[in-house]
Length: 357
Image 1: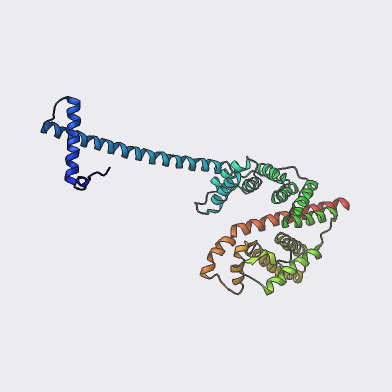
Image 2: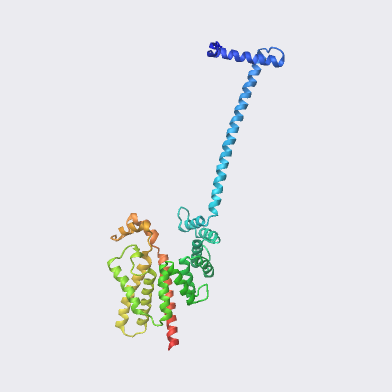
């Protein structure tokens, strides 16, 4: 049945109908028809009710937002906890603290991170922690602790730790001196691809088999590097271009230097002394340049290093590379270590010759 709804199109009619419905409802509940004041009071109460309902809705919305934010924060905290339980992530925190990558450089904090991951059996963290104990960075120097962590990483096949533990056994630093164990560790590390281990293995094998020093072999190594420097003397050298592993060349240079100094100090011939002094001057220059300027270059930097070939000094764009690769303190440490090793080896060979005589 069709109905007339024209009154609904007029807002005044709508309001009148609402007012009529409200009056009827009050009359129904109270049994009497409301007056003007009562109707106004009802309107006021209805407005207050609307405000209360509005505030309740707003509160519910805020509560829902808060619950959602709390859920998101809880998820974030769970993710953070999972990261802190991952030794690879923990190790990366240690590396960032050690390098000062995005954070302030802090060796103590780096050692703490490495130790957390190392205690979870992470080989690279064990190796890095051992390095810090051996050098005394971030922790008191303790070669026995260094040997402990090197051993843990070495047992997992970490070639660098196998080599470094071998060096401790060869020198008797932090562990009993034992060339046989040292040589076995060098061989394991060499199989794992450690270049220093390969040269250490060859050197120790030669030392254990042949009492007399092979001066000719060392001279050939020195000459090969000297020829390279004559044609290519870079501000930063890429070790991949060296004719022998860097550690092998350092050892050969220092060995020839010691031999030359011994010859100079045991002769009264001034011509021989002067000739030795000239050779020593050249050898010291080669040792310094090799230790300071020649480094293992990150693949991402090789192009930039190549551009430095023809530069006589560091251009502005290359200063970050200089800071990254040129480290006088590290170079001095390398030179000291190889000097100490050569002196020990020569003393050992002399003792063997004395016994054989």
